[in-house]
Picture 1: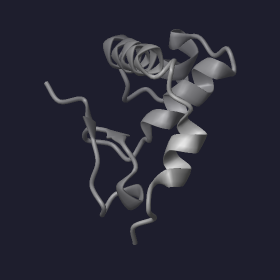
Picture 2: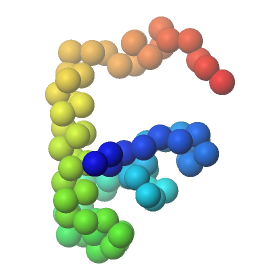
Picture 3: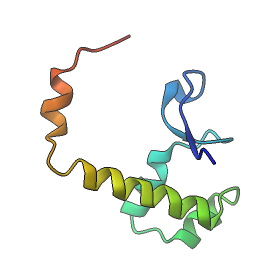
Picture 4: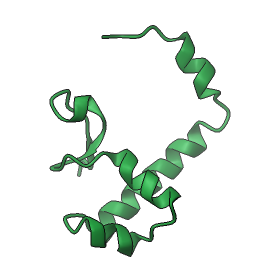
Length: 82
């Protein structure tokens, strides 16, 4: 099941949880603020434990894949697209 989608018509194309307007980055931000999975679900009852955990695992995998990449330098080399 596709969990994350990006559509230019929804939040300017930011990755969101499919079927919602909730940006994936908000889950990471809340986890970074030490919110528990239960607290996140309490604030956003349309989410399930499985969804929150899957999002966090995806973030962990991406982070591990990019540990040797200087993202700031990399992105500064890329042309800006409108």
